[in-house]
Structures are given as structure tokens and as C-alpha cells.
Image (tube, rainbow, N blue to C red):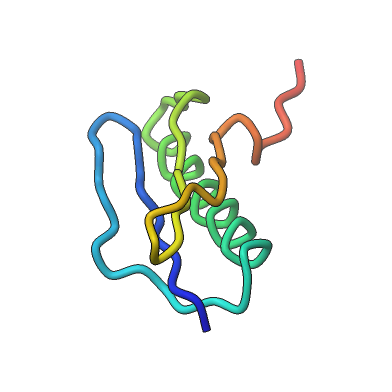
Length: 78
């Protein structure tokens, strides 16, 4: 299975050094979306949410697989 890395860009940059073995890019992006929703929920509980925060997914060759912004994983209504 391919290796994918999930690099977090929010109040600080956290580069994923371990990664995860996942079947394909689609599953990696689904995993990134799940992670972003969980982190957004924590932020909301702390009284804030920065929609520009993001997780960048790369493969084991350091190729860009995709980016998931927090704004992409929450339904914001007024």
C-alpha cells in the first residue's frame, strides 16, 4: 500500500514524518477531511475557527496529492 503524509498548516506548521499506508489517493484525502473536521471541532470548542487552516497530503515521493482546507469540511450557514 502507498504511504501518504498529512502536513498541517494552522497556527503552526506540523510536518508529518510518519505518514500512513492507505489504499489510494481518494482514501488519503478522505482521511485528511476527517482529520480536518476533528481539528475544526476542537477549535470551535475553544471558541475559534480559522477556515484557512489546511492539511496538505503528499505521497511517498513527496508529490502533492491534494489540500483540504478546514472551510471545505464544514457546512457554514447563517
